[in-house]
Image (cartoon, rainbow, N blue to C red; front, side, top):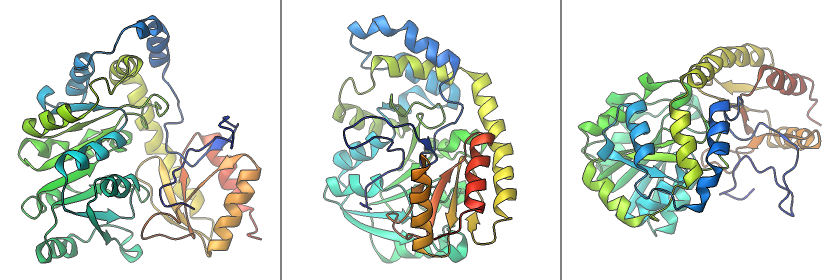
Length: 352
């Protein structure tokens, strides 16, 4: 498996989408809300115009929803766009990436010729960051930037605000990816630290929670002078017309937001109860809409993935995540019927 491959690849060799149950991508199973569908359809004719280069309406909606200053926001063609934008603008010489984590951090840093090192979390610590060890590493060796995530992909671990603050004086820039935070709510977000922590940048996807991965949408927040630098470096029309309209509508759909958060809060406990009964699997308690599983061997995990693929079900092998290996699989949490089907198949899988 290539190091920069991702989940959600439902396409055949000739580029045609196939009919998979995709448990490999962590997208809200409720799909597009009806209000967002209507916004896309009703604004189709607007495609004859360029999108607003300032994305003013969308920024206003983001500022209102997340209680952020308008001037601290940059809108993005998906959160991944920002990683490349950041490294190409800032050009940090040496970067520390907390792993296992999303591979685009590494890929985007490599694209800017950064020197990269990894701080690997431990399975014995349930992949929680040992901040005593992390701060010691940052004191013993000069890093210009550290990249970490909360909730982390693929472990789901969260980071407390007081631990983010420990990093403030130890590096030039702290990049925090909060792309899955909408699944559990604003009270778990550390974005408010941007107000006082001038070297903190918080990145957030809007595609996962609002089920818009094919449209691409996200934002980042940072100190105003940094935002101005990033604005000058990006494509002037980086967020297309329909993405802007869909984003505004999605951010104002309180019914969809509440329904989705209530669902994940309930469904993750169902998943935990079911996994406890499968003795051959170790799992790490989910915080959001995916769960990390560990099998007895690489071969068992590989056979399971292949067996499921034959049944038109995609699971995410984690063997290309630094700090993990082929024994680990990430499974999305979807609807009860879909989760039940997959868990029943796992329970009855022989491993051969």
